[in-house]
Length: 261
Image (cartoon, rainbow, N blue to C red; front, side, top):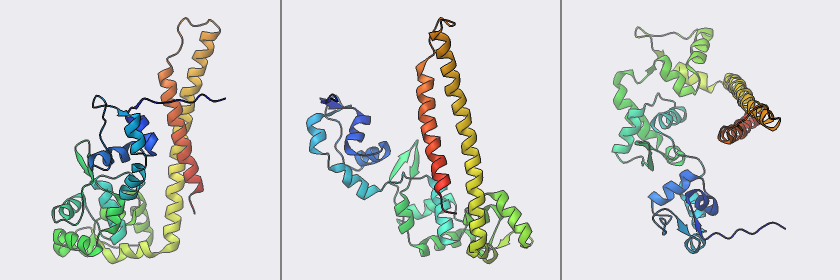
């Protein structure tokens, strides 16, 4: 019969699990006052308080979503793909300054944004900010901007641009309309998506193999200790980290393999 564990208090990790939240969700929930702070020594939550607010986890998820917030670079890339313009980090900052976008929190001193807020952002506001920055260059993009709009690796865009015979102006910039036409080519988009998935899968499987080598090495050292060929047992900390990393990378592999083609 399983042993019933009765907690008298909760640390941060246990409190997040009790509420059904990831650590980032709990942190933001605390920052925005949706969750109460610890009531024991400023570090732990009493069992009584934890039970009283158990339903608050659903409030946090409803308000902040399931996807972790992103920084300015990823926010710009997401907006670029959505509106078909080469959005930059400074454009995101302008959107914040003029009140169109909220900074939900900070991570290591840098602002972060909810994906839901980015997706709800008025596309016209984004276009206006980009247009103000680019001025007469609004109808052209460099290869880096084109890759950002298409969510392709830079090398992939350069290759496709060459294969398709895309021309550039005197500044080496591509016509925005030509870049957007590539993004509207459904067959090409599927091909590039498959290519990106294959590259990511290869890279992730390579990581998996390296982590497996770490685990196997630990097992060999453990066998040596059991067989009295080594006087000191292997440290378990590296094994724990490797197992967690292996579980994460195998989940990533599964997601890549299940991704629609």
